[in-house]
Length: 423
Image (cartoon, rainbow, N blue to C red; front, side, top):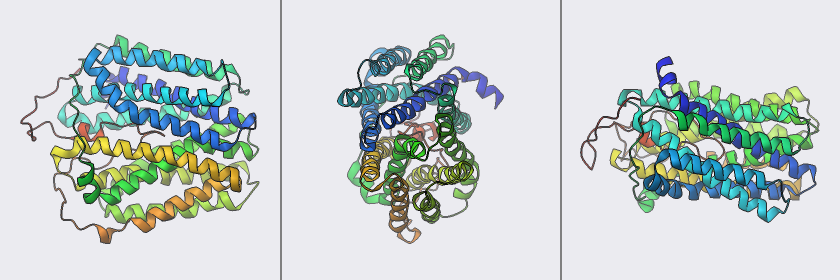
């Protein structure tokens, strides 16, 4: 494990710094709009714009990498992110902020594709699971640190935006200076949407709902915490606890998902999530310790849905289609992350702040009704499914190439693949 951390340390460090900047920006903008009395719907719209940009960035990132290579793509996109973040300080015109959030999402997705394709290419076949696991830990650590960074400066001034820019600027340094082997160009595949819709509808429903919940969490949960009277540092802790619980959930979830029927596990977790979300809707004025406990419980369950949906999908899709499947799951998650904050923000403005967690409970309950082990026919079950468990991405779908990373580098539809080099 230590050897892998050293071998891919530059990429892991870049990931941590990116996530620090990304989550700090998300929460800062939500709190800034709340402090200025702007409707929660706009915070949801900003989150939706970010998600839309990330969905579009999947194609843009592939094209850029094929044209100029990985390091140049990463550096150029980091520069775009820094410029877009600083541009928030010149004007508070909300349509401009929507455009800037979409631009940040697009550029950041390009950076994520660089990091993840690099990890995929340079990891040995028997290392890929561990490499991805450490990578996801770095993602969660960066997300939590980004929330905790809110407490370093109590005011919502320009300092937070400068912190975001510093994080993204520094993320270029380890990538530019790494001595690791550069990966080969990407090989994009077309997505057979119709066939996947017929074969794995329950998996797609799970990923869609997961996107709705994660997008709403990152875009609106800070507003909920602010309207409960929490200080800026307490809001950061409220968010960080949920993220940390989500990371801790991955260990028992991986064990359970390999031993219990996955559709049944999805339904059980969705039911528990619906029940745990209701107290935050029912009760006003809860103590800080109670809020932290409920936030941890919700995060623990919420971040379990995506990996289970992905694992269920891969159980029922042949190896030659898993790259295309990865793209479809990313798009589905991104669509959910666009829809969720818009609906959640509208509900918060129409029916009160607590409606956010009624929305959580409703989405989870709908998923519990939709997914059932009895509907899994087993007609397409793949005994060699490579992906046993995958950690949940950040708010807007982080692991774009997870199915590729876990796919064996042996013969597929196009013939045998060469063994990738170790950096």
